[in-house]
Length: 190
Image (cartoon, rainbow, N blue to C red; front, side):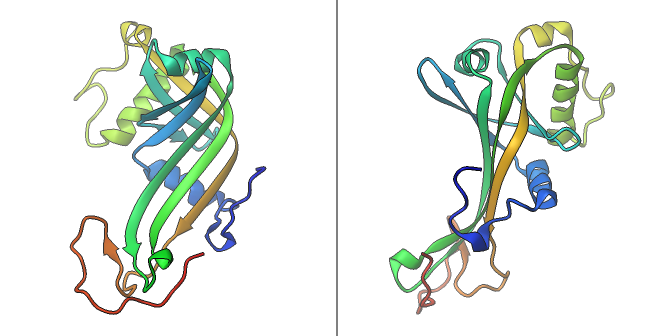
């Protein structure tokens, strides 16, 4: 990738197993395309298919994401999760636990059996407790006629994470509960 991760101690771009596990568990992501002469972002559910290094996203049949996919095959995708706040004595030293993946590749609008397969994978990811054919019906031609399904064929990715031990002094979740006031660690996170 042209722009390497600045903090080498947080770079996990070469750890394909970690990246694939993260993409399998991350709940949401953001697809970036160019449409109407400006960047378009679409926050959405997604599915990662490890055997093909493909990320599947779906949207309405019409709109900026569809126009962007029709106009330009290059696209980017990002997903991330936030962990605990990591306080420090100086405000500039505060940090946060996080994990993120940014992928670049070629975006294609898919239809037919591949689109049906991708939509079924969505159900398997987001409703694993429900059984196809018993608890819900499969995707029909009418469903596909009103849905755009996209495959981002990942050509390259960048990943980073900042994780601390469970007992990290002073670490607390965003939104609380907050630890009692007291001296914070004297650390810097450049």
